Amino acid sequence: MPQRFKTIIEPFRIHSVEPLKLTTEEERQEKIRAAGYNLFNLRAEDVLIDFLTDSGTGAMSRDQWAAIQHGDESYAGSPSWFRFLAAVQELFPFTHVIPTHQGRAAERILFSTIAGPGKVIPNNTHFDTTRANIEATGAEAVDLVIGEGRTPGLIHPFKGNMDLKALDSLLAARAKDVPVVMVTITNNSGGGQPVSLENLRRVRALCDRYRVPLFLDACRFAENAWFIKTREPGYADKSVPDIVHEIAALADGMTMSAKKDPMANIGGWLAMNDDALAERCRNLLILTEGFPTYGGLAGRDLEAIAQGLKECVEPDYLRYRIRSTEYLADAIDRAGVPIVKPAGGHAVYIDAGAMLPHIPPLAYPAQALSIALYEAGGIRTVEIGSVMFGRHPDGSEAPAAMELVRMAIPRRTYTQSHIDYVIEVVREVATRTPSLPGYKIVSEPPQLRHFTARFAPL
Ligand code: F0G
Image (cartoon, rainbow, N blue to C red):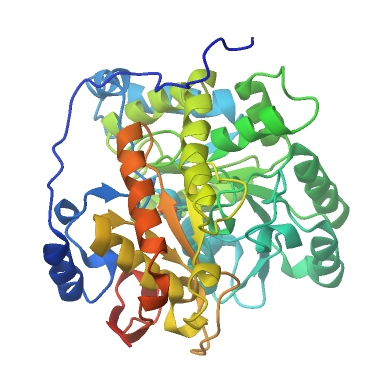
């Protein structure tokens, strides 16, 4: 139905508020210095607009909080488990659903069961925890996103698509070493970009040809489904749940973080059709997560996820969600700031490599920009570049494919005036990029260094 008014409003009003603490630029310069110039080390209360992640940071609805009151904490067979199971299977009808405390627990269980030395696992782009869990088993994680997906300024409707030729050659050479093909929807590390159903169908066909199972990393499945509805020919009149069913029917299983599209603060699951694999995974689950009807979650968490799954596929919500991300992207694009185009579902990614060409990749331009945005406006973003991906398992260091700053937008949390403020800060910082310094790492752990490394300006 055509809309009479062009403003797409938040399809909710505010029911409970959290205060934000205002700080001065001088205070923030001191806080970030004390944090070793790592935004993960800041105290959250010293952040004004927290775009570090959209994971677990969304605002729950009245109905989710009400559902929490129905949480039944029975160790085994809780009614909350059955509500969770029904809500998951309504969208993703896999035979086995294994609840976990968050997405990476599902990844750890899956990959410690099927990966290991000599194995290789392709994905459009592995998220950092997925890659780390694969590499921790001694296996190799390979990113095979289409070429367009590696070119930030290039517009393509499905930049998260898998490079089918590259997948075909990998499978032709090494299918016996590939325990699973993964597809991440939307492709977080590649800019929150969607994967088309057509591409997924072709990935499925390759998996069938080489007899390899296909798993989804489906954290942002609802946003991906909305992009399919609005961009892929033939889907405009299909409901979001129907599109999700079509996606699910192409896969043999999934890993999931309920902290993203399902709008819960914690939770996840691993699902699959293979009975024998499910049994091995459940045994591991019991070892470290919990009994198979709660898997490290409280009954109340299972309730919040079940309700969130119903809300996240509503068209009014998704229209607002995708448009509000695009609103931020459009405004900073108009100001001449280079971004990944088109806007992602959950985040806007600034191309710091293009914006700060005077800083070489291994002086971390995206880290430099993140620090500047915090100092100037109290905005916390995350570096997705050579800090996150530059250190390899053999200890060597090499530039990442892109130097991005991600502004991940928590769901239903910030208003349009918060976003207008962010736009103003980004525009101001953009006027003085040549004066921003690069950084060096002064201490770092062996894995996932971006979380705890400490930096110093050059
Ligand atoms: N897969 C993808 C695509 C993700 O984006 C994440 C988390 C995970 C798996 C792991 O899930 O955090 O519940 O263990 N992404 C967050 C982010 C942390 O900020 O993008 P988790």
